Each structure stands twice: as C-alpha cells, then as structure tokens.
Length: 64
Image 1 (cartoon, rainbow, N blue to C red):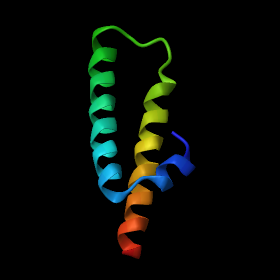
Image 2 (image 1 turned 180 degrees about the horizontal axis):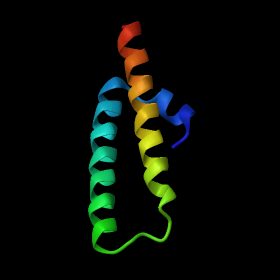
Image 3 (image 1 turned 135 degrees about the vertical axis):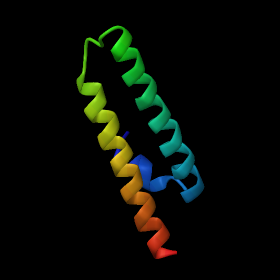
C-alpha cells in the first residue's frame, strides 16, 4: 500500500485496516508453517505496511 493512500484514510479507517492487516499477517504465518510460501518477502512487506499505517495513525492522532 502506498503512503499517499494511507495518508488519505481517516483515523477510524486506519485503525480498522491495521487490525485487518495484522490478521492477514497472522494467517500468512500459520499458512507458511503448514505449507511454505514461495515468496517469503511478503512477510517483511506486510510488516512494513503495518508499521507505516501505525506511524501515520500516530501522526494524525497527535495533530488532533
């Protein structure tokens, strides 16, 4: 997800999206334990996307 897309989201949308992405990351980890993923870089991409969203959420909450 691009940073410009994240910045356009509202605080409530960001919170919801963070929870969804964390759940997706957990399910990817479980699926990887059962049958290995071909592209394991998806883990780091997902973690970085979550971190970006958390950072933008903190910025927005600070400015309010």
